[in-house]
Length: 241
Image (cartoon, rainbow, N blue to C red):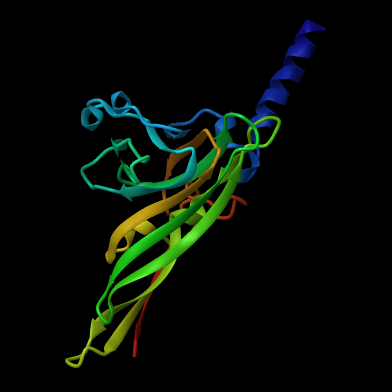
């Protein structure tokens, strides 16, 4: 009887992990290599929070508990995940993403009823206009009662943009490059990328970065997917006018 029970339990355990699609299981419920960032809402910022932040390899930054803060993000090729300026209460915090591509998830923590609107912005060089500011997308996240729920926020990082990349002698655009579902830091014309973090009482937004590849034909289990489990196939097209 014990042997039979052990076999049944073993089969159940195996079946629990054979789930098609990356969105079938919340990444917060499984093991896997990832970087964890905590965005803490606070009424006031103490300078000791950011002591020696440049060398801390910290996982925490602070924003206004109520109101807007800017979180500027970069991706240095020789860098690592690092909070380089924790104090978003003075208007702007800064964070570096390690090289690579990622599936990104977030969940709202803390006291129920807190919520936040996160809007992603990109400033891109454009040869016809100089610079082009584009709203790349937004998500609304709320701490509801019950167990916190993770949400895929890839849409803030895999973006669409259409930019002038060639002009004639009169400054008229002759070539346009369009990016579709493109990892934002892979866009050569990217100048600045940031989040407008409009907080309404959310005390902690936990963000996780799971490294993946961008090869939907490779058959790997870890290639990048949207929240519904479909693969992300970033494309770039050049249109000559």
